[in-house]
Image (cartoon, rainbow, N blue to C red):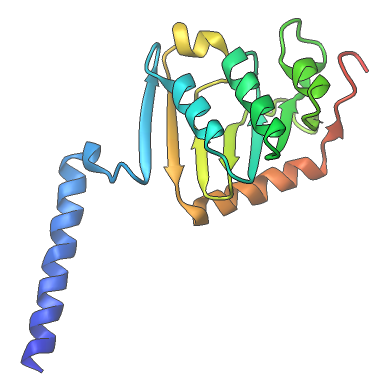
Length: 182
């Protein structure tokens, strides 16, 4: 019984130490689970492209605004490698002058338009059902070069599964992209 109590005490102290360490220094979060980026010029686009290039089976995207050429090219490259790539975009992509929707569609990437909301303001990517990319970072050039935005890359299957569920919910009421002004 003494050994059991000693083990419980040790575990409690260890848990308190870990919680206290994270509370005092949030930058000590395990880097293998969460990576944090800020713009302008904080490597957000580079981090996204890196994750897309390492995808093994699937990439789901939800985007409000999407004009970043490096991100679009990485999605097309992934699609060409046989990765299942699916994209949900805000309805603004039907009328926007600058959008990657035609480029992606022409490259064979399935695109759906979420017009069920005043604004489909998501900025989300789910890779292989286990890596989640989200934050305020829009998938546009200005987000990397001029805007103050943030990006999280989170490796958590449970959290990613919640986002996949939400992605599928929006996919269900979205329409297939037929080009601008369809």
